[in-house]
Length: 291
Ligand SMILES: *Cc1c(COP(=O)(O)O)cnc(C)c1O
Image 1 (cartoon, rainbow, N blue to C red):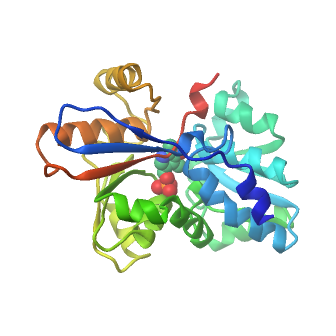
Image 2 (cartoon, rainbow, N blue to C red):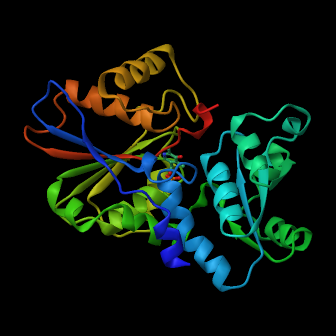
């Protein structure tokens, strides 16, 4: 299984980002690691699916919103590795509407979609709710929302290669549930600094990640979240379009677009010292745009 999972990965490409500033900016294109299990979700699913297989589960169950990259990636990966899959989707009202690109991708890969009210969805970590799901869907391996758990972090540690630990001073990533940045923090060299750009408003992610690590060479900022999760602005969308034209690198408006907007704004402000070698993790997230 292990070789199996790693065998489907493409070689990861590093690409220079051209800027007018005196820093070295390189992007690590995890978005190209696999056409369907894209970006950080590849690393987050890897050890979870290996564990589900080792324990003999037949079904994988997880949670997400209507635009969840994790749900789309899980549906594909589950099918590919021979599991059934169930997606618990936030928003009862969606059951009566045509499926969007993300959810129809999930359904095409045989994921059974179950729509729950926002109120019930909030209970997704409660023991009672999980017990009830176990009863309703027996023999299911449950992966939390966004795919973040200890096995996900074991996977996201692998995002940073030994040469990445030597070749860069600062590593930037987008943050949703914190599983990716935690792996980077755990894997990085103590001389490196990990800078997270939150896709959500508020400081709660700092608290969550602090619960996972005792290291201090990192921070998460939420000042480039554009008002909150999945919120956008004309300025953000035009930045993404311009970036794609100039650098030939596609970005998504929920995670990587906000991060790169933030990085360029910080460059403009002279936040990064001269000659710093910055590695930007392109965590994927383009699946919703493909249709
Ligand atoms: C899911 C996702 C993230 C967030 O990752 P976490 O581990 O949940 O913090 C970042 N970028 C993209 C493109 C994603 O799809």
